[in-house]
Image (cartoon, rainbow, N blue to C red):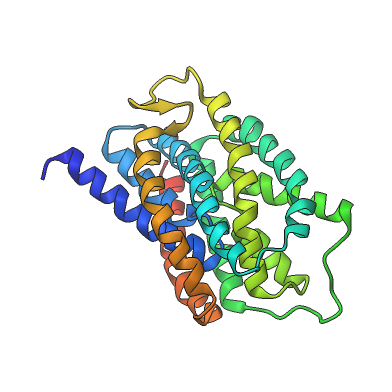
Length: 271
């Protein structure tokens, strides 16, 4: 098997795995994709600083496709809270554009790698704790949802994730049932991804040192393979989410996240 075919197989397996996780846990798969795409780009001679940025941007671009496939499966089960999608989406778009057009382009890739590692480690810890909210707490009003959406979109743009690691804990903290939170997070992944992709393309156009097949910070070959595979397994993950003990699965997944967080911290600090 030559190098190009091996690359395709690696990206296809990555797409199948992240698609399933997107449907199962309401995440866009960025927590898994970013470390692996960073590694793949590094092996292909891309500078470490640029490799991290391209991995984050490419990961986010795949979520455009994964979220559509995942949310269709959740919607069929009536699990998506579309009222919350409408309330959070405007802030998400504003925060995403601020992050991907401004802060992302200015920050060094090494700093983004460190931030990614810390953020993933924090997310994993929150999964393990699985704290229960006060029974009287509810979702905030329109202004509060805009503010929360802005924070979700901004942080998602910096780490290349679909926002599930922020939106799912936030919604469950406001007493939204876990299955509704996961399904609604999958729906929110689409505006997060679209807004951030626009920013990544605009801020990366004409950048020196980009590998062949790049559109701004997005590496199109990886996007094509991962997205085409992830759309097949996202509905399977969504189906499994309604029949499996998601809370226990999250704790297992959190262990994997600690390893990936440690890798990205190492990459950032070493640079």
